[in-house]
Length: 124
Image 1 (cartoon, rainbow, N blue to C red):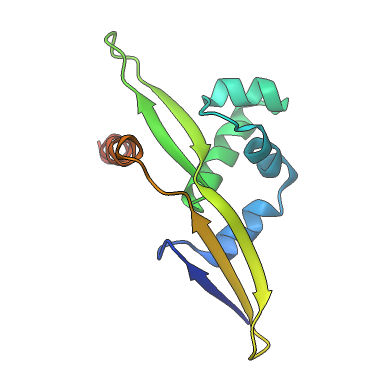
Image 2 (cartoon, rainbow, N blue to C red; image 1 turned 120 degrees about the vertical axis):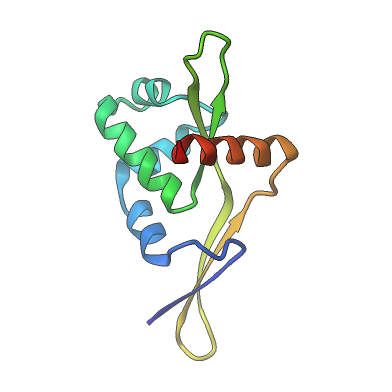
């Protein structure tokens, strides 16, 4: 049985493990040294754009990436993605159960504002 300890309560353990088991998802995480768009990631990672969008969605839902929005005056907003965690740890506890900890990065005020804007965008 797997148990999860996390600094983010809504993190789904199975989602995290499934996403991290995917080579393309790991490539995306490795390449995100700074926030990037899906198109930029597709090019840098050499992954088709449609696949990149699917991977980004799964990584974001698992809590491993954070999506922010660049607001443009022309009305064409751009989503950017960045790594949302510092570490993922799997350990064997004293009761011989697995403990998985996802340590989230500390959110800056800009990160919190970007997350709120992304959530508003998803709901509209």
